[in-house]
Amino acid sequence: VKEITDGTYKASVMFGGLDAGWVKLAPFGPNVPQDVQDLALKTVEELRSGELKPFTGPMNDQNGELKIEAGEAPSDETLQSIDWLVEGVTGSTG
Image (cartoon, rainbow, N blue to C red; front, side, top):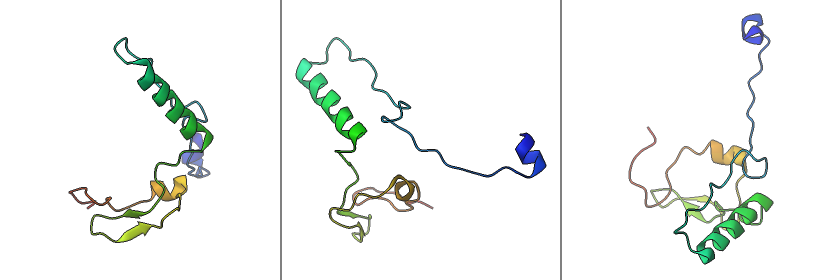
């Protein structure tokens, strides 16, 4: 607050998720089969390590226009600034 009132505040964005420990998987309930637990834990580890990039293209907007090229994995900054809806989604961003 002091920085704001002094006029010295500088906006910043912090990214963190599984790798930073900001996001965690909740415990599994007793009805979740072991094979499903194993697959979920494997997927979480692949996300944490960066091996799995779920937003890798090709990806089109809802008008069919290519927005993310095949094989391209957009950065967190790019993902945070997307102002379009993915193909198959009904709605608008306005």
